[in-house]
Image (cartoon, rainbow, N blue to C red; front, side):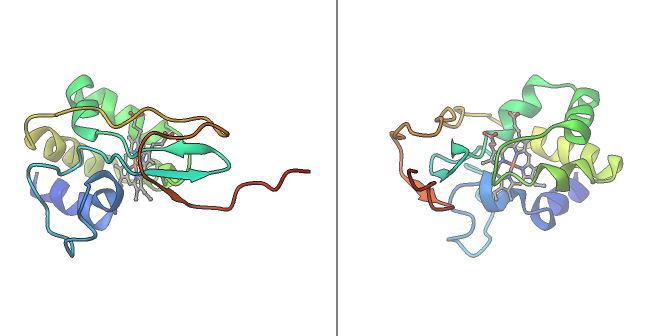
Length: 132
Ligand code: HEC
């Protein structure tokens, strides 16, 4: 679990999945850690929200979490390829760490397809495509 806490830091998971983390200078707030964020990232892919990883870990067994981590893909800016490349032992530690964080809370807002206006604040990650 200690190892999992480190993986979440050095793997960059808190950067996006823990709201307020970057602004606090990297303080891990047990109330919000890895619960996802309600500020969207908008680009040509639509608007995505860092998901609540506590809910994911609660839903999945350790084995299923490892399988997902090794195989999943997601929309930008989620660096899914970095997670796919993790050592299995690190993924297991990460799972135990996430599961230890407690009360999962609410899911992040739903993905918004391109061309639709999100109801939350969002960061424009890339300029929208110019109309032809
Ligand atoms: C640059 C921001 C960013 C970073 C860094 C990041 N994520 Fe994400 N993550 C996202 C976003 C945004 C989504 C939602 C993508 C989508 O809607 O397709 C996501 C989705 C996911 C999902 C899919 C969840 C599901 O319910 O299917 C997993 C698993 C995940 N992230 C794990 C991680 C882990 C583990 C780390 C650290 C190693 C990490 N993420 C780092 C932004 C990030």
